[in-house]
Image 1 (cartoon, one colour):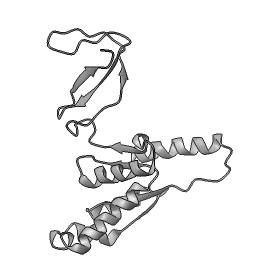
Image 2 (cartoon, helix red, strand yellow):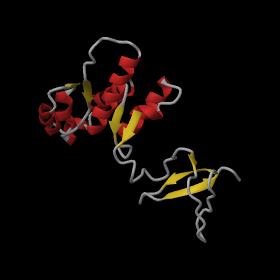
Image 3 (cartoon, helix red, strand yellow):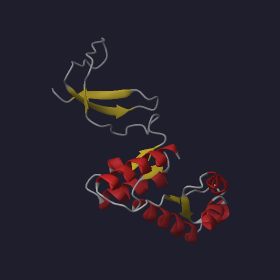
Length: 168
């Protein structure tokens, strides 16, 4: 929820800068297969949580989840998530990844509309942004980096990056 709170603070600041006098209603679409998460929403009185509570119960049970209706429900959840202003998810989950990929079809670049909670651990091979090198780095067997150069890479399972020098 700290990421949702941060997003709403930025959103509210943009509204003020654009001259809006309207109070922002803080809504969260909750997509989960853990019915207990709905009980935790009671701790956040300043938010309105919307979603499919009954789906969470059915999705937590393999017998009801792995049916054609269960497939329809999960496809519906992914579609709804893709239309949200911001998604907090895990990219290790196919649901989070698909919602983000669908979101990409609605926006030129939806990278700033999603935050993956497992980003620091992977997913393995996920591309990272282009970076400008701040400190030179020259260790034998590792990618040599000089101040000011551009580099990009791929995050490994352990948080380390395998990179390439874009200036070459």
